[in-house]
Amino acid sequence: MKHLSLSAILFLTIAISLPVTSAAASRRPSGEKNVSFKGIDVDSLVRAICREEGYGRIGGIWSATTDGANVGIVPAKAWIMATGITPPENERTFAEQWLIILLDNPDPSLQPGTLMGWISPAAKPDYYNARIFTRRKGSTLTSPHQFILHLPDDGHMTMKGIRKGIEINPWRLLPYMIRGTIKWRDETPRDLDGFLKKWPVPHTPQNPRSL
Image (cartoon, rainbow, N blue to C red; front, side):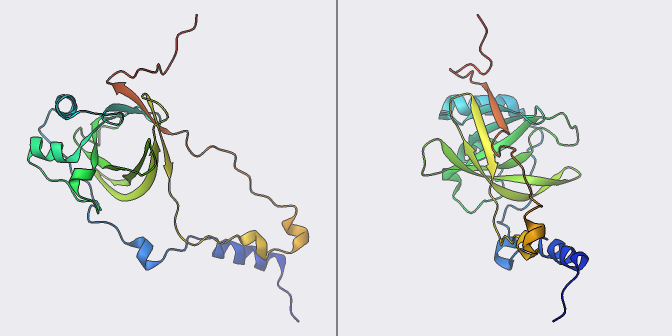
């Protein structure tokens, strides 16, 4: 019986570890590209809508912890009525959704008023399903991916990506002696990224003052 060399085994494991995606998983919802609400004072409009419609815990203005960009989260139905512009759909009725609208960004290539994604409530309290654009081509955002948003209090919102598809462990193909010496380790928490609330000012201080 002919045995594979170590180099051949390693090559095979690398090939198998490449992403495997089914046709069903590659389908995108109708809102596969973003829109931009130009010519609108989006900051003032977000505040006005939230004052009139109520903002609950998730509505208002949030700042991203990754790059400091500010976004507004508003009820989709109220935003459509105020602007007269219908954004791309996201497999749900607009009555059940909130929109994530860019207010300002350190990168000038993305203009205020850009649609960043959609949010809908989950069955679990303080959790939300989100679909947020993850790729950019010029000023156009594409590739919306699913995330879980969690509000542990009024001032913090964490986000965690959802991974779907077939997962193969290539290390199982290695001989036992070699497998025991090779381990992949990543202890980075998956829910450190997210948003801090800027408006309305949360009841829970984000940076408590020291006595």
